[in-house]
Amino acid sequence: MGAISELYRGRISAPTDIRIRADEYDGLNANAEDLHSQIVGVLSADMADTLEELIDIHRKMESITSEDSYTRGFRDGARILLDMLCGD
Image (cartoon, rainbow, N blue to C red; front, side, top):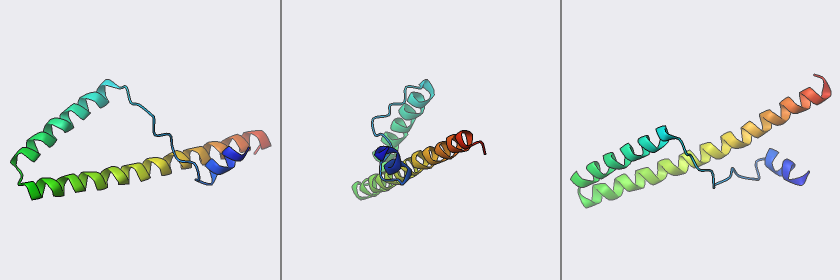
């Protein structure tokens, strides 16, 4: 039961190999790539670098949020199962 305790305490991160296979996601991703190319095409090199830095920061923030949501979801699920098993 060590892995469950580690996950509950937030010491195990969300899986990084999750793949989204939804058509809607693929369409949005393609649209985002097109917009990115259009924007970078009209920016100076310095501004393009700044944009890339902003995108990297945003991705890191999304990763933190995703991992936190994964851990919180596990904790909520564990509480529900304990309530069911204990009859609360």
